Image (tube, rainbow, N blue to C red; front, side, top):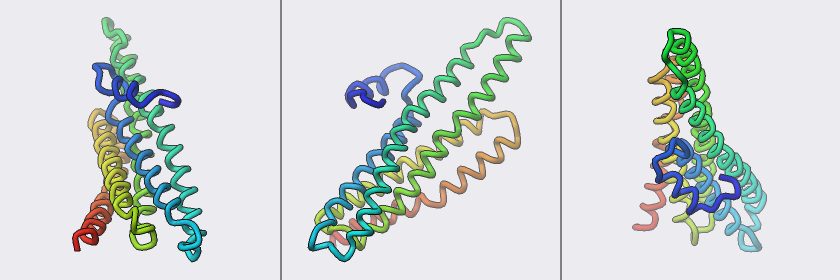
Length: 206
């Protein structure tokens, strides 16, 4: 989606086309979360926040890095799913064609699990950054910390779903087992994102 207007990209997402899809949307959610984390860090700079300037500079820089990577994964996910779609479109009239098609499908599905796994790992890093801002970030933008955590949590849960949907279609037991492990590992951080949002809301309503 690099250089593409957001309304155009969302129009493509809404249309009956293979890409972009849910995996790309998850990556975009992560990129949005990263921008919010960076924004909060920027608002926690200056003379008033001199005691934490190094932390905020580091947080902002890391958030921008993760945001750039998330945008790359928007396109990586779309490209990977396009390969899956192409594999399913291969001819299957003869036994040889059927065998080639099945091999291509399995290879494409295995490859397609990688972008959502990376989105999930990236989302966990964003959740950790958001958590670090709950107590140290500028309280005037604390709601944006909660929104960042919520978006990162949504990206994480979405990534898990996309890992699982690819796992379900794989025939190789070793590949399935590895993706089961990946999904379980990612799942451990889902509650953290929800807890951050809940903590911020509790503070706002106290």
